[in-house]
Structure formats: structure tokens, C-alpha cells
Length: 160
Image (cartoon, rainbow, N blue to C red):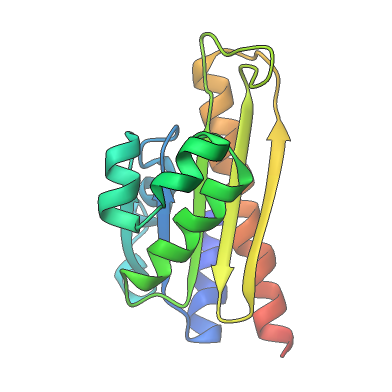
């Protein structure tokens, strides 16, 4: 069974709807989940918020958060995930914001991606530095990591 299939099965068992908020992956997580038949039973919606303005308008990410931390930050990833929950019928949301490349800076190098995971039990954020793998590989790695976060959260939900 593929990871997206596993996520959909676990979400059905847990009675959980999923939402995602994506920036650098441009909808790859939503696509991985909705490629499968029956995904509408557990996938509510996806937000592709590539610009800062979209992050603010669609998810409620704070202008002060963006100016203090920048779009590629755990603070913004957390607010994106929380916003996806608020603006959907989901009980579990994952977010991704990062620098897929090419480019980056000394402080935010290519391949740095921040993730958020939000549910009624709180919000978890983390950063992965995938390295300068090239745009396509960074985006795939970020997609797969986000799917792994969803799978892990659903495992925890099923244990309760």
C-alpha cells in the first residue's frame, strides 16, 4: 500500500478530514491524496498560497509574523496549518513553506522547508534541510515528508 493510500485508510478509520496549505510544493500533497479514488471521503481541501498575500488572505497568516520571520519559517508554517484548519471542515492540516530553488540565501538556503501540522491537540512545527538537490527533488522530498507527518499524526489519533 502506498503512503497516500495508507493515509486515506487511517483517516477513514479515525473519522478525520484532512486539509493542506502548500507554498513551495504548489499542491503536490493535495494531488498525491486526491489521485486516489475515494479520497473525497477524507480530503476536504487544499490551499495553494504561494505569495505572502495569499497566505494572509486565505489562511490568516499575520503580516507581523511574515515580516518578523519571513515566509520560510516555522512561525509561518504553524499559522498556515492553523489557518487551514480554521478555514476548512478538516480536523487535521499540514502545511509546507520553503525554498525549493534555485537560489536561497545564507540564512535560508535552498532546500530548507518548514512544516506545520495542526489538529485539536495543538500545532507541531519543524524544519528540514534537504539540501540543494534541485527544485524538483526538493519539492518531492517536501511532499513525502508532509505525507509522513500526516501518517504519523493519524497513527497517534487511532491510538487514542
